[in-house]
Image 1 (cartoon, helix red, strand yellow):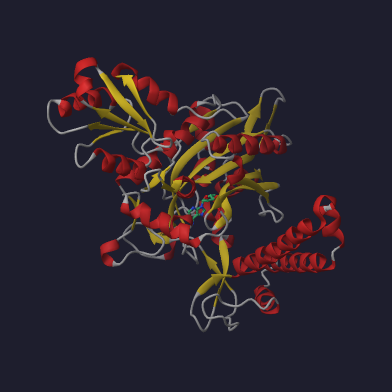
Image 2 (tube, helix red, strand yellow; image 1 turned 90 degrees about the vertical axis):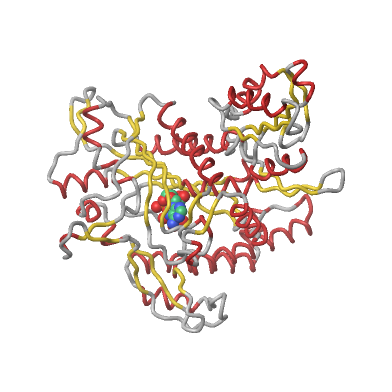
Length: 509
Ligand code: ATP
C-alpha cells in the first residue's frame, strides 16, 4: 500500500460523509490544517485516548496521569529551547509561490534515490534467482554504489547545514541536487529562512512583549514542570512515569496532508523518570512495549516499522520513531526519545529551584534522566482509518465499504435493529438497548431495509448488528451479525453482553 493518493482521497471523503472529520469553519471556506471531529470521530478519538490511558496509566502501578494547562510561564519555552530553536527551514518556489520545508525537499530526494536502489535490487534478484546475495550486490554494483554515495552526501550536507545554521548551503544543496518544485517544475527558489513554529498571544489587557505567551507546541513541558509536585504528592519512587493527553499547537509550514499534519492537534505523551545510566535499557524496553501496544489492536505487524534517528536532537542520546504505513507511505506515528537530564536540568537552571530526586538506595540526590513516548492522537486516528477502509465486492454482485476498525476503537459497538417497525419489535429492541447501553455505545435504527441498515453500520465500523424479529418475541433469541465475515448467528439475548465484551479484548502479542 505505497503512496496511494486515490485511496487517501477516498478516506478523506469517507471521513466527512460519515461524520468522522470535518474541515474546521467549513461554511467560511475552512481554516488551513485545522479540523473538527464529528459524531463518530469523537467516539473513535475518545476510544483511542481511553485505550492508551489504560495501557499506560492503569496497567502500570508506577505511572500516573496529569492534565496541565495549555498556557504556561513563557520562560518555560526559553528553558526548553523552543524559543531559540523550535524552527523549521522554509523555502519558497518563486514561480508556483508554494512554500516547502527545505529539509523535507532533501529528504524526499533521498527517499526517491532509495526507491531507485530498491528497484535495481528487485531487478537483480529476478535475474540471479536463488543465487542472489543482496549484501554483496549492494557493496559492489556500481550503479547502487553511486546512488548510495549521493544519498550519504546529501544527508551529511543537510545535517551539517542545519546544525551550523548554514542556510545558504542548504539552498545550494537543493540547487546542486537539481530539486524542482512539484507544482511549477522550476528550480527558481528563494533563500532558505528559519521559521519558528510556536503560536504566540498576549496575556492580560496590556499588550507589550513581556506579556507574550505561547500556545504549547508539546505537552511534555507541562509534565517536566510538575515533576516535583507529582513526585512529592504521589510519593513516587524512581523509576516512575507521568502521562498526559492534550492539545498542542504548531504553525506548520506545510500542512497539506489532512489530519496527518495539523496546526492544532493532540498528543499522548509519557515521561518516564529513571536513574542516570539506566536510560538506554529503559529506552529499549519502551520501544518494545509501545510496539506491542500498537500490535495489540490486531493490525498486522507489517504496517509498522522502527526508524532509528541518525541525527539526534541536542537533548537526546537515543531516538526512534514508530512509523506506520499510511496511504502516503511510511511516516512517523510515534516518537520514543531518551532525553537525558536536559529538560529537568534546564528548568532547574532557569527557575532557580532544585529539581532532584533523593535515591534512598544510593543515599544521594540526582537529576533523573527521562525516556519519553510521544504519540499523535490524530495520527493514530488517521492510521486506524487508513487501515480500516475496505471496499468489498459481495457474492451477490453488490459492493460495500466497511471500516474494519479494531472493535475496541469502533465508535459504535452494536446496532440494535427491529426487523420491521411494528408488531412490538421496536419495543423489544429498545429493551435490549436499555441493557446494553450502560456498557457499550449502541445505536438504534429502524429506518430503511435491513440491508441498508447493515451498510450504514459497516461504513462506520460497527462490529455487531443485532436484529430483533418475530421469533425474538417467542423465544428471546436474536440474530447477531458480525461485521467482517457478515455471518449471522442466532443467540439468546442474555449472551449479547458477553459476546460483545469478548470481541473488545486486546490481541495477545
Ligand atoms: P514531524 O517530524 O512529523 O513534524 P515531530 O518529530 O516534530 O513530527 P514530535 O515532536 O516527536 O513530532 O511529536 C510527537 C508526535 O506528535 C509525532 O510522532 C506525531 O504523531 C505528533 N505530531 C507532531 N506534529 C504534528 C502535527 N503537526 N499534526 C499532527 N500530529 C503531530
